[in-house]
Image (cartoon, rainbow, N blue to C red; front, top):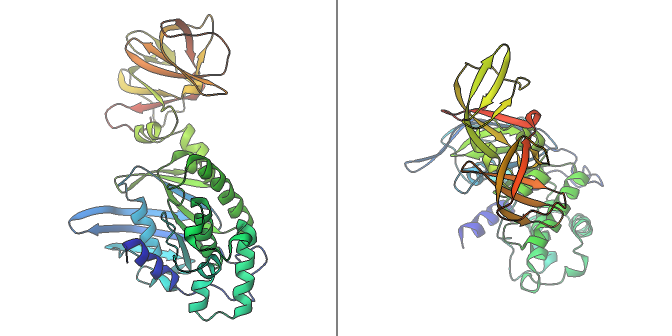
Length: 387
């Protein structure tokens, strides 16, 4: 077997959470909280995660977001019990599960590569874990029927995986998790193998499924659109460290550091280097060409006069308007359907603006623009932390 197949088999051999009598019509009766404490994972000489803490509330949808190699899948697999931890603890529903077998963790895991059994029909794939655990036939039929209805799999129950599209296979993989009626659902980049249209459709279905089940879900992705649209809260990871954990709106509007600021957003946040100047009770961000009053900015500590810093502003907060104070040459126009991304060459720095006006603009034109000072972020130039 491949590694994924072995992991799928380990999860399928897990015990089914809850009894048939306890399960309600909506699905789960006991969504569980997950607490990760001082988690360290070393693979050989490589430290993948070190002293990581994470609290997932019962019933919420938490997304682990970050670039490849940041440790997000390793963290998910450690919660599932597929990777041994070096140090720290993992609790599910208040119970220490650090060294528990996957079968004892009351979890269900959906893989990136579907991990379906190719010789079994859809119905047999859905019911496999229940059958090997001796679940009564009537209960199996009830759970399979409910999952099939939720995911519109009814007409496909007699087909084999080879007869299904990628989107249908992923629905079956999700359905196989649903029938387990687990306390926690874990998703390891489940949509990354699908085309853009299918990803959009299944993303919407996953969000609706979470609303119907009320289940605790932890979801790994490198796709910021998936994270922003699905998450109740999201943890942005880099190098095995959670850089920021909060609601999508909080993380997007008030990034804790330069990495988060530039990782989220399309296009990425505009960054300009300068210094802070304090005079007569007013604070200005200043470059060699331009000053912006940032006196209303919620500084964590009173900034020192002359402090080198980086100003960040989202593209939607760069306003193109006649009579604005600053001017720059248009270097690129990207039509995006209902809006355009206008790239401005501002003294050698590329500044992006999301523009929804119909004002004719072409490469080489001069455009007037301004920054919305109420929506800027300021970061320490040396360490990158939010000021």
